[in-house]
Image (cartoon, rainbow, N blue to C red; front, side, top):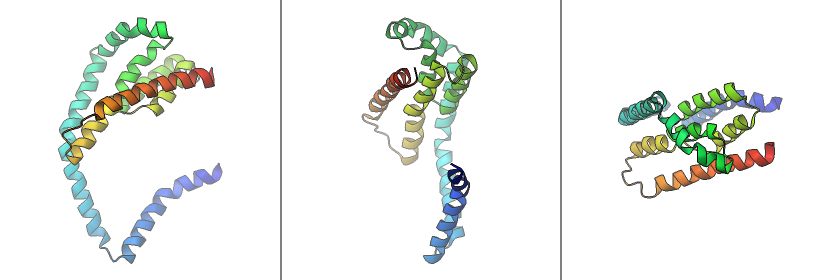
Length: 176
């Protein structure tokens, strides 16, 4: 375990060193290549900034407006019938939009129920089994200029539902 910690401390500096050495061997002007990459990166940031602002506003509206609480109230009877914990519903919905907002909800679950509780463990597993679909699609598709997403959204939502159900099943069978 100690060797893994030592390796993790040095992995980024070693990677940078290898890239610089490789660039020197290939006789690449490393500084100019770095500056060009930084310029391209800033152009991408400017292109996706409106999308990021829109997503942040949507997250703020969902959290402050009580939309997540209303959706939870509507879905609670279905959750109770299936045995799915209704307290996870806001997290599973927010996870689709924003990882940082989902992490905030995860911390709330940890404070209220504890990280070792069924809800805490299920939420942890769920965070690993799901993706921020709307963020990922909007940012990455916008960055590379994809306009026709075809079946991406439907497949990503199905995969997220599968991840949520897998988290429920795994937590129930493995931990409890």
